[in-house]
Amino acid sequence: MRISERFSLEATQFELDFVDIDTDYDTPLFVDPFFLGCRTDLWSLNATRTLRSFFQTFVNFIRDDERRRARALFNYLHEPNETCLGLSRGKPRGNAIGSIDSEKLFNSIAQSKAVATGIVEDLEDFRLFIDGIDKDKISDMTTNIIRGHLVTYTQEQCKLWGIALQQNVQSGFYWERAANEWRNRHESMLVIEGRKILLVPKGIVSYSNKYTPQKYYNQFVLEYLQHEHLRNYSALVQHRVNGMPYVTKKSLKESGESAYSKDFLATFTDAHPEVFRDFKEWIQHTATAISNEELDDSDPAIIAQYLIRKLGQIAAGGEGATRYHRLVVGILEFLFYPDVVSPIVENEIHDGRKRVDITFDNAARGGFFYRLHTTYQTPAQFIFVECKNYSREVANPEIDQLSGRFSMNLGKFGLLLCRTVDDMDTLLARCNDTYVDGRGIMLPIIDDDLIVMLNKVIEGVPNPYEEFLSQRFRAVALN
Image (cartoon, rainbow, N blue to C red; front, side, top):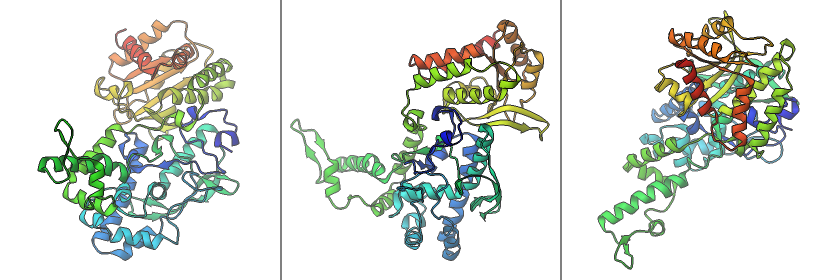
């Protein structure tokens, strides 16, 4: 049974920031450390720093011939099953580093020339150069290392969706980068049928079919060698009918010296590090977050229709405030993902003196939310959202409440959501005052605006929020 069903969230995968796992079976997805390292949102940046802290500590021990200390760190990379991700059949049980192959894998890493020579720069590189390590093991290593971040993320998502947590539960070991050691703590945890569960942001999972040794070998190593054999006019050069010379990948593979193996990849990379850099840059520039459609085969148009209908069923006023807040989170997640992620409800700022209804992390690598930094010169690490389920007009107090959250360090962009307004021009003028005064950008959004964007989804328009937010910002800035 999926999380959304088990806790009656009345929300689809499109509205949830986490992978809506089935806690009875593993979902064949993997925490992807390379993809995690490409992301720019604060949660991913912190998790990546933790991952690299462990990796550097572990590898330094190996390179300094302190194998006992390295082995002690490696012992904590056991088989996690809290995420219900991976390749296990039946009940989730993990499929990574167990007691049988633990020593063998450690020895493979410790004896690897790729580790000793520095070719291996990140945890995910183990998959390319070390036998016995593939996507499932990399995913589970990563899960263990960033478990502390996943615990916090799970707590925040459970608070957002009203899911009860069990108090004083051991978190499980995680890497504490400040102390440079493994730690365990007692936390509020999501426990289902006696088993701890960790929710995972859908933006950091993948099918792990891009950062693979086969892709590196076929698309980069062999193509480089083709050019080299042509340049040197080697014995592998053949000629077409028109006399054009060529070298086949098949002939390279059959030549013996270029046959595929992880040892060969390590030797080649040591001699040609620029090819490996090209491979990493290519993946970084082409990597995209997993789509909602890949996680859930539901038709986005049907989801949009459902959200429009649901929005119309919530009455304005205090009694419907919580339902409205959660629905707004779902709609914004549906519209903005993967550019805006990790919603937190009632996030405290300024040492708890102020609260923001909802805070999102800005993870955009292009588009409107990216232009906030680059074109509009507005810091926007976080996207602040205030939700007013009022049956009356929003006015200056609500404007001041949202703008009072802004700061250079946290961000100076926010969305003010309310049900309706009688005079949008006046509201835009008030937002313009804030903008002109240099206090930040504030865009009002009413139900009809959400419906316009959702209807664009129904029409098949990609990223419908782009046009709307750009026009709404123009209306505020030039009012």
